[in-house]
Each structure stands twice: as C-alpha cells, then as structure tokens.
Length: 562
Image 1 (cartoon, rainbow, N blue to C red):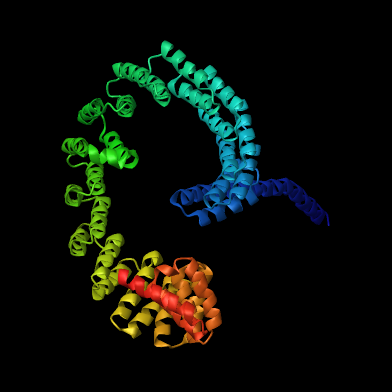
Image 2: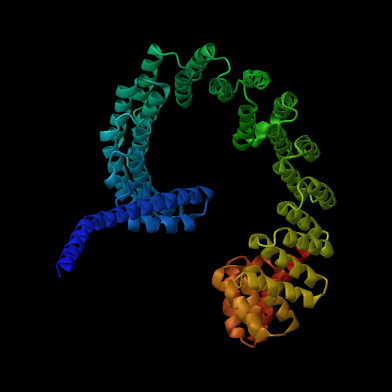
C-alpha cells in the first residue's frame, strides 16, 4: 500500500510538472500557425501583384478580395485591391478601397493621391479638390498636386483660387517659365489682358526666357501689332536662334501683314536648320495644309513645294517626313508624286507596318487594285499572316470580283488566328459573302452558321444571311427572326430596315413592311435604288400606285447616275 501511495504521488507530480509545458507548446503552435499564415498571405500578395502587373486582373482581384477580408488592417492589401477595381472600371469600389488604405496609413502620399484621382474619374470635382487640398496640408512640396488643383479650379471657374495656388508654387519653388505662363493663361481667362501682358514683361526684365518673350510676341500678334511682335520674336531668337515657336511666330507675323517674301524667307531658313528636329518641320507643314487658305496654297504652290522638297532632301529616309510630303502632294492633286513618296517611305522603312499600310491605302484611294494586291502580297513576306494586310488585299480582290482569292485569304486569317474572334468572325462573314457571289449557297450558309456560333448577334451576317434566304424565298420565318435582331441593334440602318421590310412583304405583311420602309427613307434609303424599288413594290401591293411611281422613277434616275 505504501509503495502504491508514493507511486501515485509521483505520477501526480509528473502530471503537474508536465502541464505548463503542454500549455506553452500549444501557444507556440498557435504562434507558429499565425506566422505561417502571415507568410502565406505575403506570398499570395506578392503573386497577386505580379498577376496585376501582367494584366490578369480577375485573378489578382480574387486574391486581394480574399486578403482584405482576412487581414482588414493591412493597408497595402486595400490599395492593390483598389487598383484592381480601378482597372476594371469599378471606380466606386476603387474609391472605397483607397479611402480605407489612406485611413490605415494617412501618411502614405500615394494612397491619398490615387483616391483623389479616382474621385476625379468619378467626375466629383468638389471631392477631388478637397482631397488634394488635404494632401497639400501634409505634403506641401508636391508640385504636381498644385497643378492638378489649378486645372480643377479653372474647370470650376474658381480663378482666384487658381491664382492663389500658383502663388503658393512660386513661394515654394521660385519663379519659372511654366509658373509665369500658367499665370498668364489664368489672367487671360479672367479677361485681364493688360495685367497678363505686364506679368510677362515683368518676368523677362528679371529672367532671360525665349519662351516668355515669344508669348509676348504672340500676345501682340493677337492685337494686330505686328511690328512689336517681331521685336520680341527677334529678342527671343537672340537668346536661342533655333527656338521654333519664335521662328514660326515671326514668320506668321509676316504672313498676316502680307509680307510673303519675308514669310517664305524665314521658312526657308527654318527648313534648312539642322538643329531643328524633323518633327517640328513636319508639324508645321501639316498645319499649313490644315489651316491655310487653299487659294493661298495654290497661289504659292511652287514656294511651298520648295519647303517640302527641302525637308525631304534633309531627311530622305525619315518615315514621318516622307509621309508628310506624300500627303501634301496628294492634297494638292499631284497623285503621281504622292505615290512616289509614299512608296519610297515603304521601301526605306521596310519594318514599318504603318508605312506599308499608308501606301496601300493610297493605292486603294487611287483605285489601283492590281498594284494594291501586288504590293500587299509582297509585304506579306515581311509581315507574315498580318491580318490588316490580308484584309486590305481582300478589299482589292473584292473590287476586282476575285472572290476565290478572298476565300483563300480568309482561310489564312482563320488558320493564323484561330482563337481571335475579332478576326475569325469577319473572316467567316466575308467567306460567306464570297461563296454566295460564286453561287455556292451550301458553303455560304455553312460559313454564316459558323459565324453565328461565334456571335449569334453579329449583325452583318444576320442581315446578309436573312436577305439571301429571302431571295430564295426559303425559311422566311428564320430570315425574319435574324433580320429583326439587326434592326433591334441598329434601328436607323437603312440596309437592315430594307431587308426586314422586304421579308415582311414576302410574308404578306405589307402594311407592317411599309412602316419600316418609311423609316428607312428618313435615314438614307433614298440613296439606294434597290431600297426605293422594294418600297415601290410594297406601295403597289397596298394600292398606292401614284406614290409607287414616284419612288420607282427616283430609283431609275439613281441607277443612271450609278
């Protein structure tokens, strides 16, 4: 008995001695578990950021949604969840996330800046302004915030606040060209031209600035004071002889005063200056074409030709220069010269799909379909299976009624881009149209059926399929259902209205058909002889013979013009 007693005491002691160890072990396990979960969360966070950067928004969003629910006190999780929502155009949800991130870490500038941006995207100027103003209280050196506020104040017509913001920038960072020119713009919007001009003049008395001197010149140009304007342009050029705005401002002052010799003399020097970038010269030539009086261009064509040719001579392989020159000669009706320059652009820049595409577009406008096909097929050697090229070549084949070649090209597009429905869908549509032109009804309808499996609401296929069924007078109920879908999508499309109304006529529903034809007449139907003939048939069926004769006569006149 004694031995048992002591043995029990020893067992009890051992149990008590073991209990603290068991408690510590459980706490330790909990701690380890928390750490492990935290590590897993951090790994998920890093992976989700990578997904977001790669553009996998839905996957990233799912992860961040889960993280903010599990760890609602982690500001970074809220921020990235907001970014996902913003990129998915859920601006309200994004604003809520950024607001929570900023609440958790109010000293993080980027959280608050992104929140302000999101409010701006929501169109809430007042909330955007108040957010930016609060940001400046904590981050007074953020210049970009001041400029954002200036734009918002101007948009709201709060000019005094805009001036105060500019003054604050000046106090923080000192005077500069951009501050002065922005203040000038504000004063001009306030219709204070004298005060605005004084601001510029005061600035150039203290600082040498070609930009501000040029703005003074521009100011005087707007007041028709050409002589004073030229003086300031010259002063700007004395500081920087290649300052393009001053050069062109001075030229413009001569043009306005009709001193054309001086105008073209300056432009000749401008085009010849090696330190002026080609982009600036091309932009000016483009502006001339867009804004100058066509009569002025025609009268001075040889002088402008000289400027354009000088630019090409200086940059003989530059794509933008050759394209600009080609467009100039095309717009001044020298098509052969335009064609020569556009082709040179393609040859000199063989890796530029833009140069090739522009040349093919020119051939299309010139209706040189043989050239378009030849050049397009040659370009396919440089850009294999390029869908844009194949579609442009198809356009040329269509105009030559070479439907078999269109089918082959469409098959090539489908083979090269099997999963890109934006390409395969119109390809099947074109194949269907081409098979129909070849009187291969079976393959035509097969292509249309395939297209509608991709997109059951694709209007071009629905319309053509329905119309061709109506020509055969087959499956009119099916044709009517397909055609109705097209006018539900585009209720003012005269072609679609004609198809549906004609099917209604074939079904004996002439009164209903008339309603749709009347609507078509309001939206371009009178420009189609086919639509007016169809309308005349329906009117005759309803006994409105006099009106039918009017539309039939108009259709015949239109056919003669076509």
